[in-house]
Length: 431
Image 1 (cartoon, helix red, strand yellow):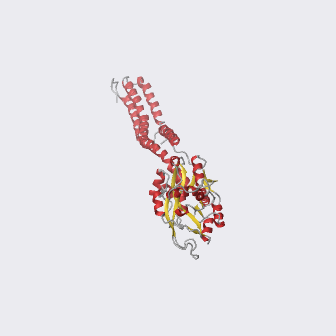
Image 2 (image 1 turned 90 degrees about the vertical axis):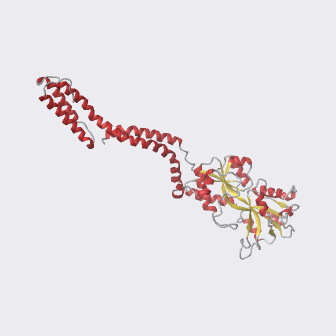
Image 3 (image 1 turned 90 degrees about the horizontal axis):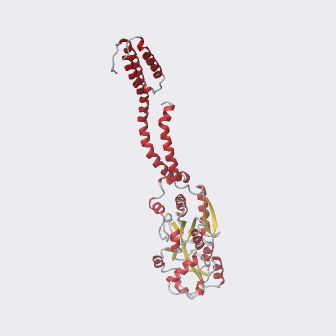
């Protein structure tokens, strides 16, 4: 196909395709942000350690993660609602109705036991017997305090102020060892330094929750767990027996407006981090949608049901995200391309043949004109016109596949020339 003809035929099609591409590009979802803010809790805590792992793994995917120090779950929820951060780990059981409107859970990621330690010489054998004890339930605004107040409510009545003291974790540990309080509650990972110290101390003992299953049934964000004998220290036999506990499910929480691609890569990262075994469960049990108290997006629900998308399984984050977004480009472009490409060859054939057939009109007119004239010099002008027509047709460029049509035209021109030389005048006759 000659270059000029190519652009005549396919040029308009390319223009239409470009217009479709520009329109689809404007309709395509925006690219995901290259950085996010992660509410990490207090440095040195379990939340912060997990946030650092997210930071490292997400940066390998090309997403910069800014860790934001906070006071804990309550602070994390407030900052998520205000849009000051994009992602946070939040203790289950703290979400309000407003939280459910603005925030979404990406799933429960680990169990956060509710530990209650009492001094060894205190007679309490269950949580309900601490109503008249000097009990610290965590600092104001902390997740520990919110969970402790909820559990106290389950045990009934209004607990006295002495049983609702607001000391922080390290202060509670120190006060417990000093005998300034009788018991202290903590919502924390078993790996927390103060939990390890308390478990190994002979001055305090861990209080079992013999009604753990009942509490878990009554509180959506709680689960019943068992601290198995010797799991803290097999050699030292810590604990010395199985201890039933209740645990809040820590959730990976995002703002409802987070970019879907960021939500997807967060889920991939959560699978890598939280599928590991812990002191309370075997590997592969987390993350999950059990015991979450915030809504989950359709994408998250689909992820837990079917796993990552085909593109996310086989391509890096940046490539998978581009291809996923490019579907919006492919659909209109393919819709345009198929009929246009199918129409192009017939249009091209018509244009090439039209170049040839348009000369037949002139040939018919010259033949009619020549045959109407007497033989001899009167037909010379017509014969010259036929010669010029032969020259012009000879300059016509057509693809090789149409050469036979071209030479057929040239032979017809020659035929008319010979006809005018030998035939008598005849009017009204055309070829």
